[in-house]
Length: 391
Image 1 (cartoon, rainbow, N blue to C red):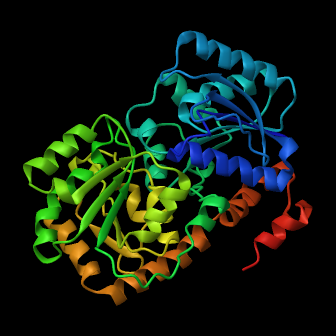
Image 2 (image 1 turned 120 degrees about the vertical axis):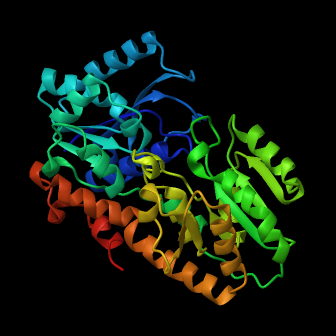
């Protein structure tokens, strides 16, 4: 079986890029790297090294936005790829669904469309909606996103299948907890891109919670990993509240450094707000960073709002809070800082749950079920795939 994935990008650490590279790697492990091709729109983050788990069929643009010329170039490359007679096309983003739909029209190739978050609730054009309606399967990354998809007219519930984000094995190994008895100051961590439009992530709420946290845990430090335009406004909030000395913005860091931060932190906090609080759907589609923190054995503070609530088991792997309440965030942080046994128990439970639910092995099992109508049975998969699934 040959699969073509139409991708926005695969080399950055963005949630969609990581979702796509993990999806391609899992399919490559199941079908063979030579049978999984990825055609990228953007080459962001590409350093010259190509993955061995699948093949990169091409990259089109290095720009920040898609120009008309780059869109035509991508369409041309997709058309040329279609002549190779793929058995399945997967669009990793709703924006690429019309291309997959045209390939089905021209070559008869069935296609799937992955759905994440904002591309659904920021509005879907008629062309994209038509492509979703004609997709053989629509794959939202959470039940929350699935609900948003099914609110679109004409999307049959039977063709909507949730496929959760998976954490790449290579990064999951870096996150494995390491025993360290050294006494250190309490560290809170958030990881997210700080681009305009991501104000809902709730970094500002954590900063506003710091004065209350510092009253009883004065040595606490808050580290934010991520870069973007809204960093300046967040720095201003910290300055106005007099907590600048307790907040560090590290920008982008390497995977190795990020894994160290996850392992070093005491609490991971990202109380993302969702617009559904005002009767409209929005906010976090899922939030793979909650799972990454759990894999590091850390308790997680998430939000009752949006898809984040599916990445955290309240009272077991972390705490879900009202994302509009800085006092609620402060109380949750202090509860975990003041009860190390509770924090450790939640971290251990979170790691086990994440390994069970959000590993590449879990993703492979989901894909096996979806590929059965295409003649792919678990008995026909390579032996090493079966071996990886054993507990």
